[in-house]
Structures are given as C-alpha cells and as structure tokens.
Length: 400
Image (cartoon, rainbow, N blue to C red; front, side):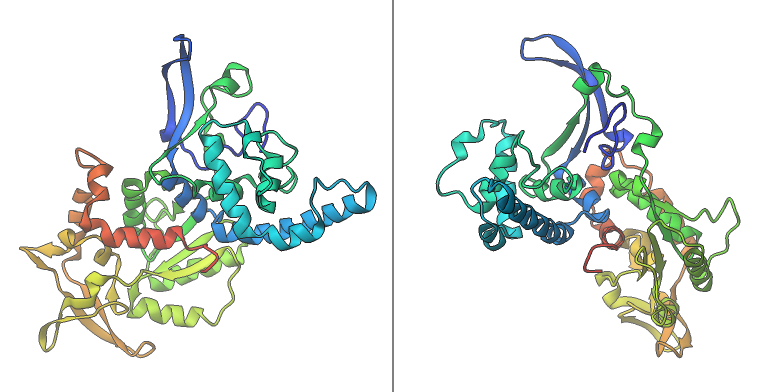
C-alpha cells in the first residue's frame, strides 16, 4: 500500500479517537512531538473480520496467488531459468496456505522484535514457505511471498495479527511522514471515511439501541455502521415496513452492505419464511435477533396464568437483549404477554410488558459509568447485547 500527500487506505481500521499527538524523547534524549494511532490486536482483528478480511478469505486469495506464482516460475524456467532455487513442483507441493501461514506468523514476530538482519535464519532446513518469505523480507522484491501487484495488505495484515497477544498495542506512527511533508498533521474526515454497512431495523427504538450499544461496547466499530433516521424524516417502522424498505434498497441498486434485522418472534420469523423465496444480492444479509439463554426459561402471562417458557422465536423483541437488570422490576423479570396465534410459524406471538419502563431504564443504563468501558466489559447484564452485536459484525463472514 502506497500513497502520497494523504493517508490513503492506512486509516481504514482507525478513527479520530485513536489519534495521539504527544511529547516524546528519542534515543539521544532529545524531545520531539510524536504523532501516531493506537489500537489493539483484538480490536483490529474484529474490524478486519467484519470488513471481510478474514483468515478464510485470505486462504481463498492464497489459492489464486499461488496459481499466479506457479505461472511466474514456469515463465522463468522457460526464459532464463532463474527461479531463486525453487522449482514449480516444489512450490506446487509445499507452498500451502498452512505452511505460509505458520511461516508468516513466525517472521512477523521476528520483525516485530526488531530483528531485521534475517540472514541468521537462513538454514538448509528451511521449508519452501520460509524460503519464499525470507527472500521477500524485509526489503526484498516481494511482500510476504508475493509481488506488490498481487499483495492485499489487509488480508496479509489480518493474518499476521494472529502472531500476537489480543491486548497487545498496534501502533501506526506517522511522525516521520508528517515531518517529511508527506501528510497533514491531522487527518481530514474524508481520510477516516469508509463505506458503511446500513442496518435496517423494525423500528426507531431498535436502531437507537444498537447504535448506542455499539458506541458503548465497541466504539471502534461505530464508524462502520449507519442506521435509518426514523425521527427526522418521520419514517414508519414495523415488520412489514422493514420488508418494504429492504425491497426498495435492492430495487435501487444500493451498493453498500445492508443488514435487515428482524425480531426473533413469530411475526419476524413468519416474514423471514416469505423472504426465503426471494433472491438477494451478495451485499445484503437478512437476519433475525439471535436466540439467547435468558429466553430459554422466561416468565410469560397467558389465559392460564403465569408460566416460564422458551420464548426464542416467539416473543424476543429488542427489549429482551437489554440485560436482566433492565428487564427486572421489584427483583423479578417483567413477563411476556401472549397475544394472537401465527398460522405461518404455528406459534403464538408474545410481547414483553411494560415496554416504556424497560426502554427508560435502558437509556439510563447507557449513561457511561465512571470507569467507562472497563465496567461494561465485565458486566453480565450486557451479555445478550454483545451476542447480538457480534452477529451483526460477523454477518458477512464467509460462512454466512
């Protein structure tokens, strides 16, 4: 990845909240201003995975790149015979993704420790993958075993992150670039901008809940998602309206990724049954709120009194994902009230009672605690919301 007079693609996994400009001291004790972005391995892995740069995708790309490498070696053999001591057969047999992956992890750690003199690692027992990597590092003619034309920086970078502990800091230092005049001191909003995934929900409260929860639990993910503005434009919400908006987006040829998120209740699942008959573009995903353990044995109220039942697929609206603390009143979970019967799903439709109270308690809960996200990280009352958000983050993973 190269760019001149701009940050180019470098800021894809970063936002302005990751920017640090502070006084520092060099090796000679001279003070200077350091400019850098700071994140962690776990955060960058989640970002890149959600954006589609998964290990599985890297594996698929490897197969294509390997074919191109074999063609290049064959070309060299037929022209001047210079193939860096490798034969096409050697590479075809031994240059596998797993071998390349293990070699990449090893030398990523070596380079991260500042060991740029790699000749000490050249031995007769090197595997083909190790030989290819060493011939390209750190300043060779290739990039981690491939040429710069083939190189996908984020796929390889995502792979290399597996070599390091989850909470290890990842630093993008641009001090020298700025001092040499190659970029501005402060990135513009456009520098941070990325195509957003649009999340369509059944209503205004659903969108507010998910947006606020991302900002609280995974603030580094917030720049990747946008939501329909129900309030400003007086947009109507319901299960049927969600389907209407979904079809309108498809008909309009929207190029952004789009997730349509239905409730995990009888009405939502009935709508999904109808949608199964339709074909959707690759940039669309149709999901429902996930099953949760809290709903496996939840109090319900019907004609025959109060019973604890499994309400997954029958009565799980967004309120059921706000935490047991929000769903409780006077120490007891607020029950679900059974309503009409749904012929399509052959189940009853339920709705949690006292929604106004639940929603008010959630907004109070969202007021950032004194210690911020350190408390939220270990708070069991965010378990269901974390599960929901990770379903959204992984919506476009290859297995989905």
